[in-house]
Length: 528
Image 1 (cartoon, rainbow, N blue to C red):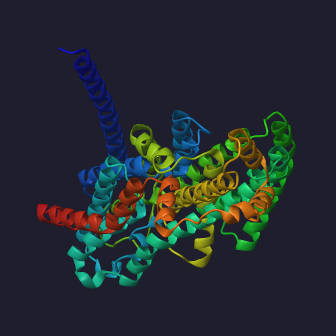
Image 2 (cartoon, rainbow, N blue to C red):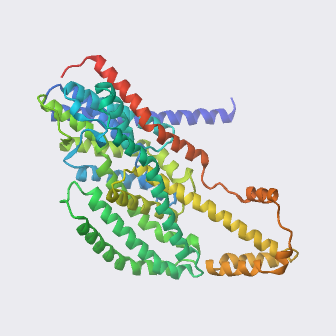
Image 3 (cartoon, one colour):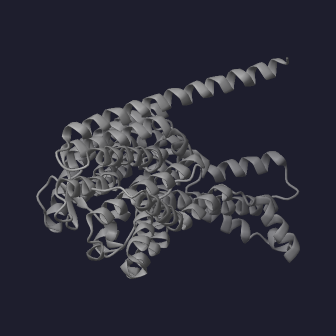
């Protein structure tokens, strides 16, 4: 037997042991939440609630495995924080967000996708909720397995849609709402990409394109942290803490977040200045100033995500629990959430993240495009600001699509800037044709170190050079060949195609799964 074969066998055995350990932890989790459901339940059909609780826990785990990557992936990909550190921070913050701010009530029929008034029988309602929960969880599991980050809300919506059609016919569907959800496939990534690109351009023009990057960073970084603090404070007040804080007017919320941002600005300004003085005047060193803001952004995004998206796991479970407590009437559009259900949701998300989250974190953080701390900061800013903007405009958006749209945006901006830079280099080389190689290298070095304004002046001077004008122009075929030579794909097209395809089929696939699951549950003929 070859040594390589032995190594492969050992690797396979190690992999199987890891999988076995994960499965054991999952089974223990299911056992614990089953016991919690048994002791907490006081209504009808305890066995059915136990089954629903296991499915709810399974859904929460899949949310953690798939969706949380959007919050911490960029920070990990930029090396602002390690994978283990990100998992620990996100797991704690997700659980805290779910338990503290998850809310006392949640929507029973997610997004109003079907008319709940046509689902009047408790048996049908419970079957629909179970089918939606299970189908959404299964689709999320499949998406995670292939490394595709998808919207958990869309997964659940698809499950409700499919089960609802089988339960009540095509007439129960709210087609206008479905169209709104479909529009988020375009709105979310486009908005996310635009805002991320705007921030990256601002950072490049105000810091990295300056000759004295350290001095520029001393002035600009505290301002960027001010904007980040304002955005995230407002995001938490309006989205993350809306269930525990009294409903505040938008003006009051903006004012409170502004005051918090001012305090943070004056606190961090001397810290940033001191740190900048110890750094070299390079882009790589200046990048390190964004490390701490990125860690805070990942933590805050995780908290807000836990507070908001836990409803995708516990909403149907809470509705089932409320129905089984009183079979005489169905829960309204909002269902009460006992503390034990919120804890299951929060712990499930954290457990799913810890066990199965690393793959998606790597996908989001490094497999789409290369991220440094500045780009990751822009993505985090985009995530918060896009949600805020969309909520005020009443636009349907997905946090997953926003984050990935922001990653696509900064990646394509890198491609464009690399292309422009290559064109500049070609102009310089053409202008120095026939000259000593060292002279060309010296000019390129001066060009690289120059500010963006000086670069423009240097290029204009070269272009006005008579010798350059005398050089033969490239024909169309030659220009096309040169374009191919300097075109660099800094965004992996295969990753983009896979992700977009998974977005487009999320609702249809989860709807098919929901319809099939509902049919199986009803065919089983259980009674309440």
